[in-house]
Length: 154
Length: 180
Image (cartoon, rainbow over all chains, first blue to last red; front, side, top):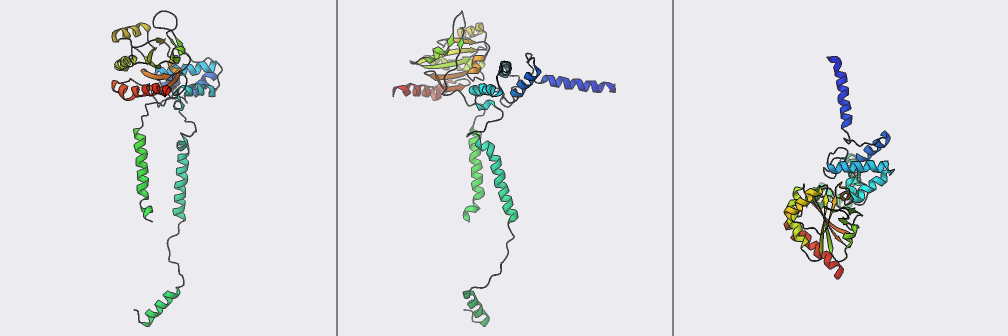
C-alpha cells in the first residue's frame, strides 16, 4: 500500500491549488488569469475585512473578482483597476496602504522607533562608568585643608 | 532633573491616550470614499414593467434633500430599519428612493406590500453592480444627497433612535446650508 502514498499526496496538492479562486469563469489566458489573481490578492474583501477577495467566498468578493477579470480582459492596466476600486471603496480596499498624510505614522513610525531605540542603546553602551577625576584643589579648599592640618578647624 | 524622573509616566500617559483613541474606533465602519462626490451614473429598471425605475437624474433634485436606501427582502436588518424609513419619507423637503439589491422583484414587491412602501421611486439592481459603484458593502445602506452630491453614508440599519440623534440633524443642516 505504501506505493499509493505518493500519488495520494500529489492529488491533495492538486486539490489545494484548485481551491484558490473558486470561480468557474476564470480567464482563458493563463497569463491574464495569473495577473488577475495577483491583483485580487491585494484587494481587501469589504465584508470579511481581513481577507483578500481571492480568499473570500462572500458575494461581494465574487462580484469584485468578476470585475477584476472583466477589466483585465478589457485591457485595463493595474493602476486603472486599483483606481476603480479606490474611488468606490477608498484606500481601505487596498491591503497594502499607500503612503500619504494619513499613513505617515504607519510607514515611518517603525523606522523612527528603531532610530530612537538605537540611539538610546548606543548612548548607554558608549557611556563611561562614572569615575572621580582628580583635579587640583581650589584656593579656598587649599586654605581650608591647611587649617585642618594645623588643627584649628573652626 | 525632576522632569526626567517623570519620563516613564509621560510615556505611559501617551500610550494610554493612544489606546483610548485606538480602541474607541470602529474598524467595521469602513471610511466612505464617496462623501462630497457626485452620485454615480446609473439607470435601473423598475420593480414592475418597463422603463426606468431610478436613475441619476432623479437624484439631482434641487428642491429636496434626496435619500437613497439600498435594501433587499432577504435582508433582516432592512426590516429593522423600515419604521425609520417610513419616518424619513414623511419629512418635508425630503425624497426617499430605494434600490433593491440582488433581490427578485417579486420578493421585493411582497416585502413592500407587507411592510408598506416608503419609497418614492425604486430601481432594481439585480446584479449588484450599481451598488458597487456606490461603494456599498451590504444592505442596508443609506445615502443622503444634496444637489447630486453625496453628503452622508449610513452603513447598516438606521435604528429609530438614530433618526433623532444622527439623521435628522444632518438633514436639517443640509436644508439650512443653502438658505443662509
